[in-house]
Length: 341
Image 1 (tube, rainbow, N blue to C red):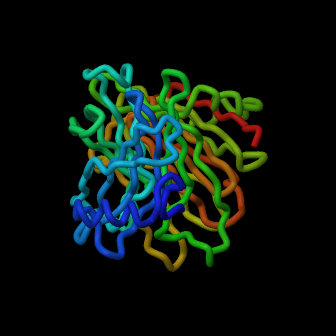
Image 2: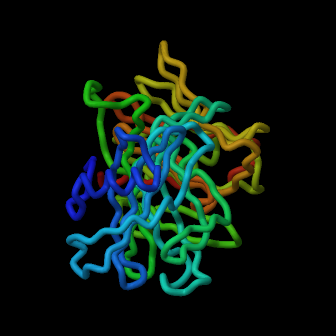
């Protein structure tokens, strides 16, 4: 991660932060995000203060963005999860033109070393939805990007009029340079507002990964469906939102599954000798579940991305089969595709 963007000198940044008290003398700057929403180049930097993480905003009138950066202030101060530095901040319009004051924006950022005390999950990624006037951000609501937390360092851009983003499929809590693990990027997601909610489904082109149908009847009937390889997509619907189910996967190294019960929707992930966090959306009552499996990963998208979660699976072995347990006639439709991965 770059400590200082090429367009700024280290001395300029340190001077700005001493003046604004935005960071300590040993300040950390990381992950510059540069874009031009109003005819001037803007830059976000992740940083930290004495007690929490902050996002800093800069601006330049240089049309080449090669210099002249001016510190505008703290765009956001994060105090909810005792994070240190903010990582990979990005900001983009959701439902209109960047120059329209009514347009709502998504401010996305990672909470380095932040911990959710209720579940034990670390390094959360947050999305704040609100309004940006070129100098200040006003939050309307906030939510997590990923309830499992292995979609980290998410970076987004505009594909025409559509916001699209992709994340690192990992988490600092259990990965690093000393660990032998299959590292990858998540499926690209789009971001959209519907009915006052932020949805983050996979982009439509994800359907092009489908090779052929493995099953259309057995999973819904509660039978075990074997996979030729570990790259599959599963899609099933419940007769009513909130009906309980238990989807179990056969993996040689971990206990893996997705469950909906009276507590909500949660990922079962257990490794021998290690206690995993609780990956749960409490009180969730979902209806449509879409899951992508690959060697070393599972990605879950529920109700068109109203809930999403990604998990890196330890080891290099594939998931070998799946079985869905539910009440009779609770699952009217279920399809399993083999993927070209």
